[in-house]
Image (cartoon, rainbow, N blue to C red):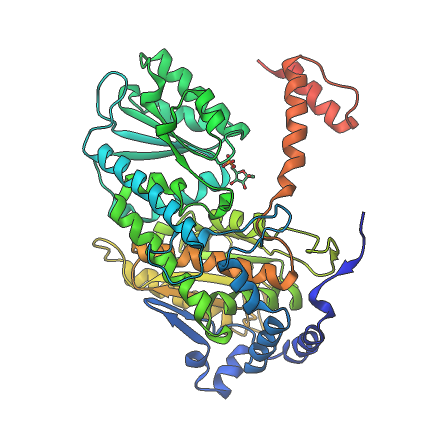
Length: 529
Ligand code: F6P
């Protein structure tokens, strides 16, 4: 095994950033604002209705210059181009990662392969046709009743994206068809949904690129058994699939016309823009789904065209590097003051950590610096009553992303109070409040946050925000020269679970395990019902 140590630390500018961090670590942001009346304006950036204030970060203009020099030193612009050009940026699997092609307009000017665009549009047309038929009551179950409930069965990237977007676009829902999601291997997840579902009017979307994933296979089988037990004899009427494995979908009993494609150049966590977004298209109708893709495309154009120092994903990604590698902050808290984005922290934990939770670089050298930060969070104001104590007075540095809509959907008389709370939290974290006499009441302040604001959470804005986070994640990966598009780290656990499952099914606990595993396995065998 290779054991060379590598990191971008080899770059001269890395050392310069280290020195610079030492020289500004003691600076107080409040003093930086006093010294420079233009700071808020200068350290803000916008794109369409998206406006981002990153002035409450522990940076100076020199920090930004040095981070941009680092971006230049790692050839970031060339690496952005490589992503869009369809180069094999997924270098361990020798594949392109062309999620940007999934949301490009048919006449797009980005350098995608035209053949890809036409395949994407063929599939979008199939989706449109199916979604329109569903809403017209023309898709019927085996007893002849029109479908009224669609249940997505999938996990990871085949669940988190569509689940988040369906939740986010509640205001755009078409109320004739209800959409639900089941992911967990724990049968209580799907079980609760089935308790509340009429088999005759239900349709299951089995979303699985591989169509081999344990959880999804188990849940799809559970749904099939439930349908058969409840009088729905023709399974094909109650299932569609989103997969690249036509052999396995056919074996399961889903005919090819009811399978929507996903290609090997689409990674699971980057797939909501493909047919994996079918639950979104059903929930909102195809036109809103297209607006969602349009919003992401507008962020793609910005990422591809804007100069690095005016480029939102680049600035945010380089700030992540700054805190992660120079302040040694371990985590990033994501706090949407927008109930519609309730699932964003969980979605980002997969996007960022499955992408960048890596320890070796392109040349198989071990990274000397930390890669992905740990992404976590919850909605404001709930989070204020949970973990904000640590953000204000704990002794760790936790950069925060606030997400804040200026408008709220529907009649929300409390919206200004929600906005006020978000703004107040950023201010409190930054300014702090001195109380020398009572240390337990002292707020040290100087705690960084970035406020990501938008007019309203339209389908376009939802697409724009998710694409922004995708590209920000890519930026980080390119500084570390790691592959953000593979996920080998999930394999070992899967393999060991397979071995343990077969022992359980044979009622044996093998002797080859470590003592702790043997003990736990025997306890299960002894205690199970
Ligand atoms: O957890 C590993 C993973 O491969 C994810 O990357 C992926 O999104 C998920 O499993 C589901 O995979 P599939 O769509 O093949 O069922």
